[in-house]
Length: 325
Image (tube, rainbow, N blue to C red):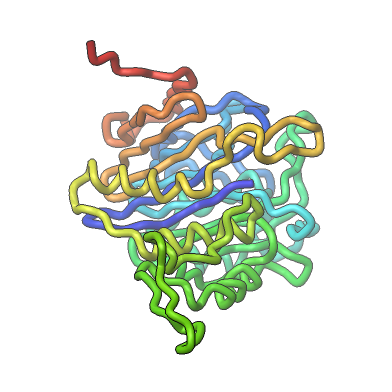
């Protein structure tokens, strides 16, 4: 139950929500420098690569990224894709990449979406878990740079790559269906509607915002996709960094999960564990957590990007309140 978004003002921003019942693994904002050896199970290791920053669980000194941006401004978020994702067996002549390797493999080598497309043509996403204690997760991905976004989905027919003109990704159903579903909301508008019901009746709006009447408000993936797309595409932001990141977090607020509204199969409640917003031009990774609404930031370029060790910053989970008297 997650949503990712691509947004541009004076700078380019990319981020996501991560919605789970609780944090199953420790998470940290993690910087992978250029000389940290990225090891892969079935393809060559990357001993030298682009540096990257994002949210990760570091296990056995390996960054398992949920979302990340590299120093060139290319970004990827991996979202849950249950009942639809299908991973393949190893295929000769292809780059056989496990799902947990997808983000570092692309971000380590590609400066933009066009370069990612080239790698994707040779990619075969294989059924391989990181460790027996870390279950294999069904995934699909949003890949974005400053100019464009694509959605990548490993399904039974193969690895589907979609143009993503919305810059939004949620979970199920498949992306093509999500995009087609927006046709159901073709009549929505930011403007106050006029009476088209009947000339025989004098009908008037009794509140602002009725141009978006019919925008779904539930927490299903299809509804979150439609709601996020409407809000993002109609969003108006100032050009400053403060205004831009504030606007991005406001956009993501429309898809956040308050505890108690969505019950999982284990009878626990879904919450938005964190919301991220990365200024991909400057390498500034901002985030908030469910309890802590204060924005925290890690700067990619304040690290030694030519180093060979991961730098990890644990999340600030507890509420931070500014006392005014």
